[in-house]
Amino acid sequence: MNLLLLNQFLKHHDTDGELIEVIDTLMIACKEIAVQLREGALAGVLGTTDNTNVQGETQKKMDVISNDVMKNVLHTNPLVRGMASEEEDDPVAANENGRFLVTFDPLDGSSNIDINVSVGTIFSILEAPEGCDGNDADAYLQNGRKQVAAGYVLYGPSAVLVLSTGAGVNFFTLAHTGDFILTNENVQIPAQTREFAINMSNQRHWEPNMQRYVADLLQGADGPRKKNYNMRWIASMVAEVHRVLTRGGVFMYPWDKRETGKPGKLRLMYEGNPMSMLIEQAGGLSSTAYADIMDVQPKEIHQRVAVALGSREEVEAIIEYHADSQDSDAAALNR
Ligand code: AHG
Ligand code: MN
Ligand code: MN
Image (cartoon, rainbow, N blue to C red; front, top):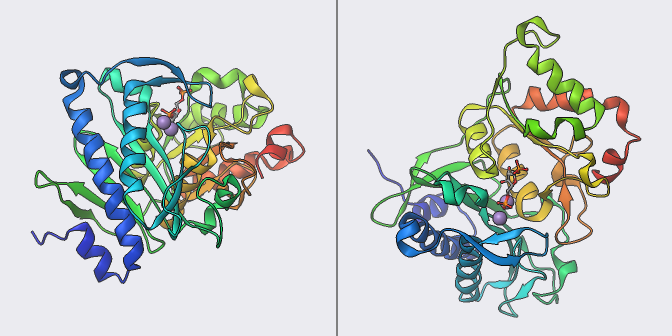
């Protein structure tokens, strides 16, 4: 087997040298997080803290540890002007002449840590606008099309980096040597699927059109969609997106009426945009049901967004089901 290291691969594809340096720095942090996760109970890192984050969610010990690792490591790279994290109230300044801003979800799917199910770190890299301070939230409010790179590291049975610098999507598996090695090149999502992922327990809270769409899927071959669907829900977006990139499918976390003023549950800057870049770069679609996620103009750093992403034709069907609810609250909040 011809082993190609992450760094060699990126250089070979003429990736911007400074961008490669930031990606390398991110991988130092992710490897440290992977080590702590693997030790688990032995390292005393499982369980919950007494703190809640700015989103009002209780923080797991590993949420805090992962966030600290990401922050400390990114600070060491002079190219990083600042960073914004799901677990920080406000953006954090790093190095004043840095060229890039980094946003991240240090540990996605963290409700799964204590049951030893897959979690991940999601990141997005933006150019720092000229003259901005790294702790200036406005500097980060760039739509997803402006991302220069996005990716995640999935900590599953193996640790896998999934990365796009705007020229397709590639997987790199973490070897025992500490190197990330190319294992899937130019990943493409099948346009059609028979698999969907949604938290069905929220069904009664969804918009009528989302209820109608999922009800039609559940009717299988006897219903209007004329095929039998399978369902998965891991409660870890990184794991779901990895399945979608690997074998197709749709993943949804739609607007719901538990909190009508919120566009959705997932976060635009730390989850929606980076995952949308990967999905589109792999030939899929990523939508709020009312707009492409990457076209949503962020107004605040912790903004939420409704998500429907994956196999192109299935996401097109979801958009079609929502065509007559363009005047809804959900639509107004999600374009
Ligand atoms: P996080 O662990 O970063 O807070 O994100 C969890 C997210 C996402 O990964 C997952 O798809 C979703 O929340 C699960 O939500 P439910 O628990 O409502 O199903
Ligand atoms: Mn998350
Ligand atoms: Mn998280």
